[in-house]
Image 1 (cartoon, rainbow, N blue to C red):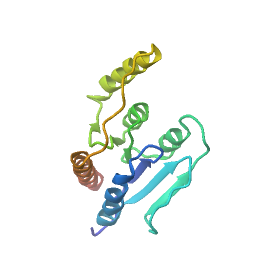
Image 2: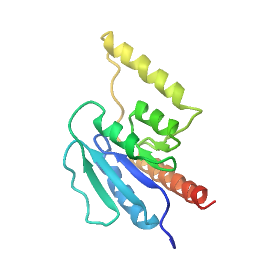
Image 3: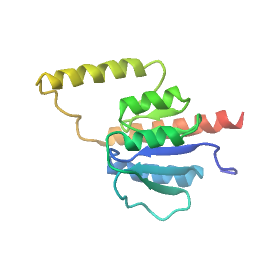
Length: 159
C-alpha cells in the first residue's frame, strides 16, 4: 500500500478467538493498518508499530464503551457483542463478527432481537447451548469479510 488507510481497526479482545489474531496481524501488515486490541486483561501481541493493546478496567462493557468513545465513523470493529456492534453502526463504523458476518443497518435489529430472545430463554432456565467451536470455514469467512471490509473502507476514505 502506498499510503496508510485513514481508518482504524478496533478489536473487542476480551472475546476474540485466539485463532483469528494471526489473521488480524497479517491484515495490519498487508494494509499498513493501525490496530488496537481492547481488553480488561493484559494481552500478548507481536512487536509492531501498528498493533497496540489498550487495557481497561474490569467491569461490564468497559471495553465496549472505550471502543465506542474512541472510534471514528470510518473505523472497523471486530466483535461478537451484538449491542456493541449496534453502537458501532449507529456511530457510522463497520462491525464484523469473528465468524465473518458483517453487521449492517439492515441486519442488526434482527440480531439484537434474537439476542434478547435467547437471553430471556436463558433467564427462564432454558439451556440454549453455546456456539460451535471455531473451524477452518469460520476462519476463512472471517478473513474474507475482514479483507473485503478493509478494501471497501480504503476506497470510501479515498473518495
